[in-house]
Image (cartoon, rainbow, N blue to C red; front, side, top):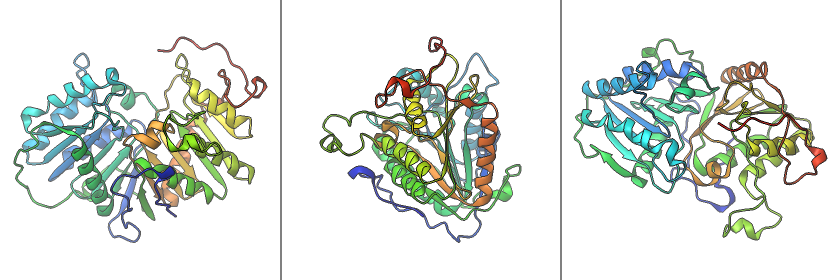
Length: 405
């Protein structure tokens, strides 16, 4: 199942056809949730034989904390380049949320320039929120993790490593598109002599829990909504959504064609929320888990949670002491969606994002078990912000939140 149609009349990335992964040889997948990501990234960098490509939204070097993993990766990347690996990095430095990343990102990548690592800044006008690592022409890592201390050491995060030449080739083309949209930072014209075409495989990556899969579909940018919508249409028994941000909107952007369609949804996230309500009504068990840290209450999550609960959908908040930065969808016992995509208008309709839809029972079970572990420290969501669609009686109340951090 895959519905490859750009949503709401918007163009998808130029790379729109999914790779033919079904039935291909030498394919495996390994989940690397939470802190396992740190060990996995270090192993992948050190194992690369001829190329490494990184798409980073946030990358931070901590001078005051020398043992931080991201600091060690600077040395690992320089060592990889010294042994002949072509290392390329695209880093986000756009005009959205610049104080949280731009200076940190440039400080980080500038530490790599004298080693000959090739670096691009992404488009100034488009947020590149994807978190992707490509190793040689065989391995693809897609994640929710940023390269920051809290993401690596504290948050709930989900990621996946896929050994698949077709998937890797697809994301290499996606990587080249992002380079073309951006601007050179350092060494982009440097001559890199090939060190051979042998590529790392799962046999070289001990410690990963490899398992088979039936199929994998990349769903970046404008392809996310149609893929998730199609999966929801065909859901039989259960749908679980684990999200950092889930935002509904009461109007389309000014000038948007949807503003002329009063009966249409104001955003793709609104449409997906209505999908959840509809499949709940036809008997599919729907569970939504949203981030709701103590002292960092999210009014957008509040509004969406209230809307869903008023319509019979079970909504939980995560542990108040741990930020859930994961972006995960689990459908029945055979589909899991992992990646960077928040359920917000900027993510689904405007920015650069990277997620993958994994088909297979073994990998699905890993992520279902992960959701179960999150639910052990969760509680029913209590709403403080009133939904723009509902009366005050349709939302529950909770204690006044502490000031946001």
